[in-house]
Image 1 (tube, rainbow, N blue to C red):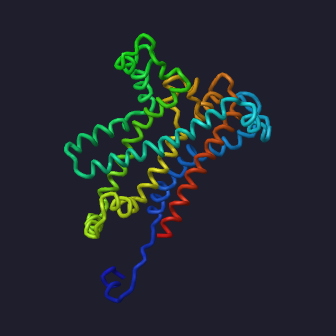
Image 2 (cartoon, rainbow, N blue to C red; image 1 turned 120 degrees about the horizontal axis):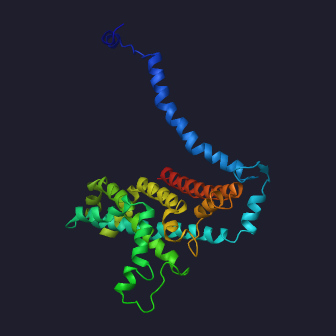
Image 3 (cartoon, rainbow, N blue to C red; image 1 turned 45 degrees about the vertical axis):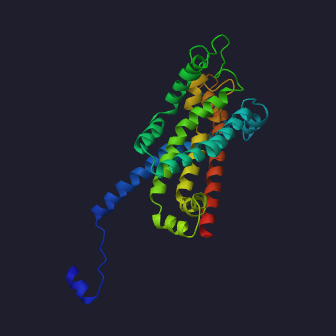
Length: 304
């Protein structure tokens, strides 16, 4: 029965997938799933298993149970400073860089002059890798050849911005925030462009000021963007590696969990089991923050 005659008789035609259609769907869906399992979930599961073993990558694998985690929490001095630095990284990007990116997006959305130039300039650091940002930080904050000490005239007793453990973490955080702010700005700017102008007009008619309109009308409509920004901020904070490794290999005040994983797995020690335990802790932190944030956002969406 043809499609036209089926419409005339009020019947619906259910299209059957041919073997070729199923083969195409299998290839299009199967290959990405297999790649995801092989590249992401396979190594993740292997890391979890190896975290309970002792292995140098060459000899036999020995099962040690939770010994790696016990040593990590009690007998590894670098762990707790690295964990604090990762949490500090998360707090700084979440409470400083992300709100500042939102502020820039609001200012540009209001139609300031040369807005295109500002968007391009502020977004430019996003296209740079964190390793390149680290090299730029060295050019600016280096003790002897850095531009900052030369500009402020501090050449006789220059400040060691990157060598002083009480300063270098804040300097690197500023460099990382410089890159993160542009990314957040573009996301919020896209969200602000999608806000219905009639909502702002209705709020203005009701006598609401600009601040009231933003926090009570505009910002709640940006909830999907808030979710994206929150997840990206958590991921960027906990996977940070390139910038500190480019500055001083993640030592002397710039310890991060990702650096400890690298030092133990591919370093001279080759403690793959112990390094996998650190990676599992980092994975647990990432999933904990992301899942908690998403659950809170979804609950807030249902209660609206």
